[in-house]
Length: 246
Figure 1 (spheres, rainbow, N blue to C red):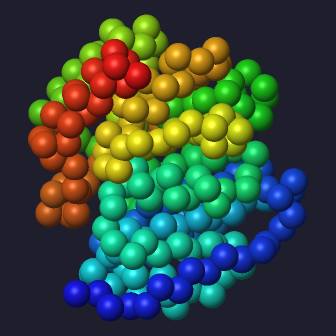
Figure 2: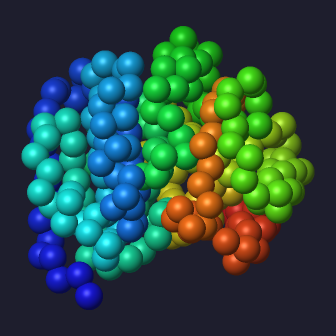
């Protein structure tokens, strides 16, 4: 059991009104990739950003690595128990100070160099919410699992039926929001149900929603992929729950 004492690192950094982008990184057992992800985020071509990493009680060394970080650009928050990706995102949102908030997984499936493309519709004042679609545009897309692609397509299709949106990738990690929008939405799902929940809730508001094509470097289960078929069934329930009963 990981007995590392609670020790959050909350750097003051730049003034709130100077931060354009808050990058929220939920992390659970990503010791093999977390340092590379951090460097890629720091090198991403967006000025005035902050990185908020939420360790969801990792037990593979990620927690110890983050505990030893010393970087004014990074805020680290440690969960006392494993709560799930949705809970980690919710924690990060509470601490975020940027005008725009984006979610970045702690693996290497998504490329932080694409941040400017994703947030451009927001900075151009054309959008309030932007989804990074793995299935649009001409960006590289690793060929991995057939049934995952079928599942993603089905969940997006089912979500679109109820939300009346025409998204191509509801389950994408890359979602960017104007800060005031996401901070005013109560997030209830603790795990991967965050994706259909947030999609259902923003669809009920008069927000301008855009999609931007992104690259995708998917990983295998041997490489650390966590989402499975049980999460797919949970996503179906969340689509019904937040569209029909809330």
